[in-house]
Image 1 (spheres, rainbow, N blue to C red):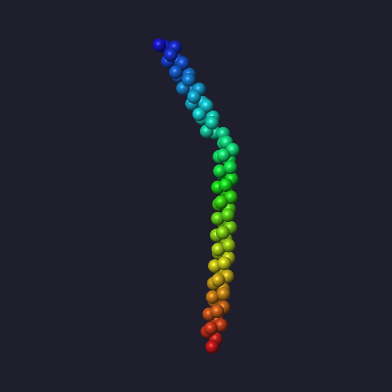
Image 2 (image 1 turned 180 degrees about the vertical axis):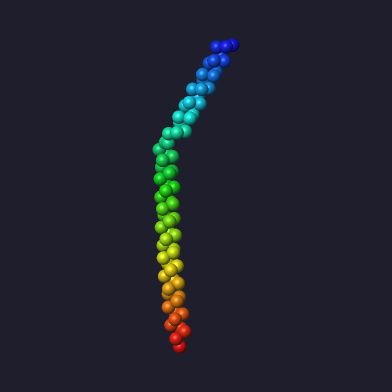
Length: 72
């Protein structure tokens, strides 16, 4: 019985060691996923920046239209 118990503990320890080791290493799919996440985030930032620029231009255009229509 004692030998079986030691073997079970040894197998459990080895299994946990492999499991923990596998979690620390990133595979190609995980690295690719992280790159995609970063690219999507950068694209979102650029779209937001472009939207702010368009919004600012629209406000300036509206101000000019209002100025022109008020001068009558």
